[in-house]
Image (cartoon, rainbow, N blue to C red; front, side, top):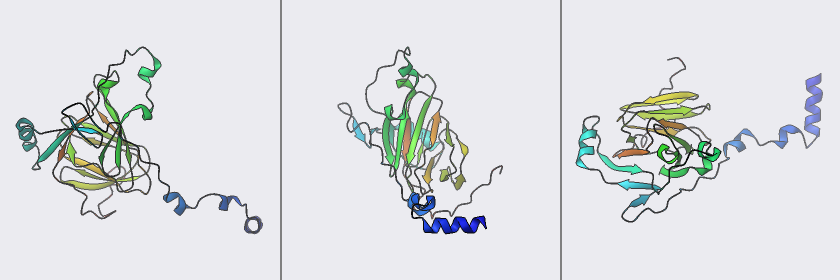
Length: 228
């Protein structure tokens, strides 16, 4: 009887709480505004694109890549801009808001708020907070050192790691070994914020000559279950 009365009242009152909130479909259309890259240009002689310094690949780096995978390396990317090391005396030197970090745009729908350790008093740590729109992804790339990805939400992300392509449902942590080609793509209908962690105080990565998700259909790969 209570449920019937409640239903009658809800249908009779236009201001019923159920109709005052957006539907699930409406929420799915909500998009946060994309960030803006910090640097549009660099120092004299530097090539800056998508907020990053683009560096040509030398033979030593080409040989390094050839030892680890069959793909060609196109370019090296770093964070531009001069900086002064903080004195580490004030609270502002230790506590950083995301909007105070350098922003880069590595690939379509993919922005990274970069906490490069050397700019913020760290000796062995660099962290990125990604903004990845639905379908967004960085290019396939490698790092000289290891990397960890941390997702605390229950979103779905597709990974390319070496020659494997697989889907993961958060929360999770992914271990990416040094020099292993990798990328990821947001399969969710909302912006994903992934945290990437490096045991170095320099932000740097090498872009490879192929994109692993070009022919992938959404949800086509196997999704590992927790504990597998």
